[in-house]
Length: 166
Image (cartoon, rainbow, N blue to C red; front, side, top):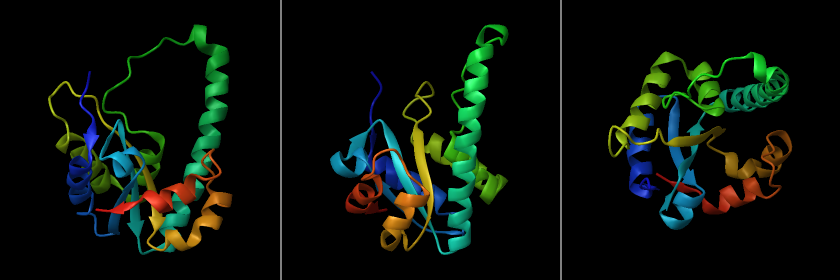
C-alpha cells in the first residue's frame, strides 16, 4: 500500500508552485485539509488576475466537454484502437489547462512539485486536483457553483469551509 500525501507534502508543493510570479497563494482543501492526509492533493492556485481565473474556468469546461465527446467516440471504437500503457507522468485535465495558460515554465514547476513529494522512485505520480481561481474566490461561491459546477452542489461551499492557506 502506498503512503498517503500529507499536509506537509502540500506545503512542499505550494513552495514549488509559488515560484511562478502569477500565483499569489496556494490553498489546500479536501481530505488533506480535513484529516492532514489523503490520496490526492486538492489545490486552489490563487491569482490576482481575474481574467486568468476566468480563462481557466472556461477552458476547463470546454476541455471537459471535448473529453466527454472524445471518450464517447473512443468507447465505440475501443476494439480497433490499440491500448497504450498509462504514463505515470501524464498531467490530468486541469493541470493541462493550467499549463496551457501559464506555459512551459509552469509545466516544469508542476513536474517538479510532483517529484518533490515522491517518497521513492516507484511512487505513484500524486494526483493534483488543481483549480486556478481569483484570490477573491471565497466571495464568488455562487458564481463558481453556476459557472464551474463540480457535480456536488455543495462542492464550492465545502471547499470554502475547508480550504487552508499554505
